[in-house]
Image: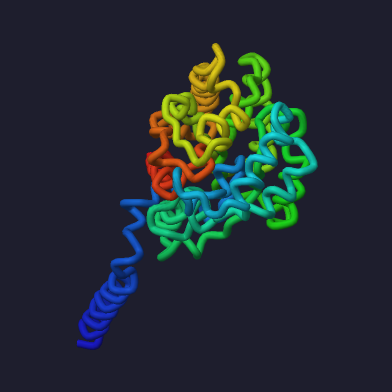
Amino acid sequence: MKTNACKILIVYLMFVLNVLACGHRGKDRPDANVVNKNANSDSSIAVIGDSVSTGVFASTSVGQMPSADKGIKLMEFLKASAGSGFDSDKTTAFSQDFSSEPENAALTTNEDWGVRKAIAMQNQLKSAGETKLFFAGQFGATVLKQGKTLNDSLREKYAKESNNKPAGTVLFMMGGNDYCRGTELGTYTNAFKSVMGEVRQLHPDANLVVALVPPLSQSASEDHVYNAEVSCTSIRKLYCPTLFGDQKELWQEYNKAMKQFISERQAAGEKVKLAEDVAATPFNNSLQSFDCFHPNVAGQKKIAAAFVKAVNQ
């Protein structure tokens, strides 16, 4: 009798524990068997990117100049930096005047539409804010510059935020500034390969997600006139003269080279994915900020969707 009673008690306790475990999971914590196939045990995220990753100007839209003063500052900066790839000393001051908007950026926002939310879900976390973010984005960053020595400034920035701790996921988005500077395809490709090697060295076990270059040339077909001196066309010619030259489709050549290299790394067993849909994201006035170039919130949401698709593959 005692033996049977013990058996019944054990079965009952197992049942209770199972019910409690299922109940504790809750609707906000998805079943690991469903969503955790791409998860890394480390939910920390490193973002390495250019000004698009910072969300600069995202809360504005074309035709919606924040103020006459900001419009003048923008044009003065662009004229001073034209042809320099934004390497001038004025870049830092300009970036401070036009603060980044991480809350509106695809790779850094805590909103449900952002990439951090998708990574949080994979790691059984309730919200994007529970992921640890190490940000190394920079206005004017180019693959070419980083390819020579990754992160002279970005590396320092990352090291300061993370204490050089490798991340579980790395989100990489650059190439637009290289295009705007007209960097030759072979030079860009070699620099990109160098950057990928250094990123992997810094984050040996990370899930690496790399964005293709967006279809920048689309924006050259539209204009918006602010006043006699400032229009989308005049701004874009200073930002990105390649848009109006015979190399305006160079971004497509970059993407072909990037896809080939990433495919080779995947075949070699590396944990790397391509956010291919970034290259199919419309790049026009309706999705751009007041400077007629950087994505507004609607544009950032489309970039986020492309990354989330890649993250969940």
